Image (cartoon, rainbow, N blue to C red; front, side, top):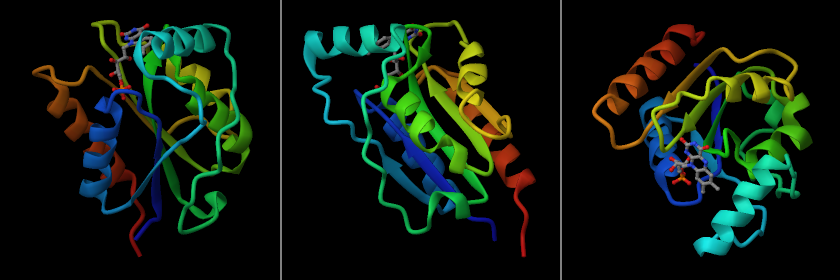
Length: 162
Ligand SMILES: Cc1cc2nc3c(=O)[nH]c(=O)nc-3n(C[C@H](O)[C@H](O)[C@H](O)COP(=O)(O)O)c2cc1C
């Protein structure tokens, strides 16, 4: 059975719910990133948007995981889209630890109809190998469970057993 880890950030819980769902389906760990920045309310919204636009990278704590990051066969990264980019905490994680990740897949959540596929390319800049899979989901819409299931099927198909 391959070793999979989910790492995510979520400000208002949508990415968190989706990633927890994916982790439950795959039977794998899911860890949330913490950067100690107050992202609550209007001030937090503005701060988050400005950090994403400026590509600011506040330091994130290394998440506690069962194995060292380099020992996972696949790390699934979950992030909300902020100002057309990946969230600042996920960018920070990628900058700090991206080189340790052997294989990655991305789950991005968004509030609009735009799919923001350029965010996948931005995230690929921080890892040694381009993503294996990626999905962009607008949580709560009719198609969201279809796209989640398609992503899961792709992960399961690519999984090496034994
Ligand atoms: C600062 C900020 C900027 C955002 N920018 C975008 C955006 O450019 N495009 C978009 O579709 N949604 C945008 N959103 C909406 C979030 O991506 C969307 O609601 C996401 O699912 C929230 O995930 P979360 O609940 O895990 O934080 C933005 C949200 C925030 C807080």
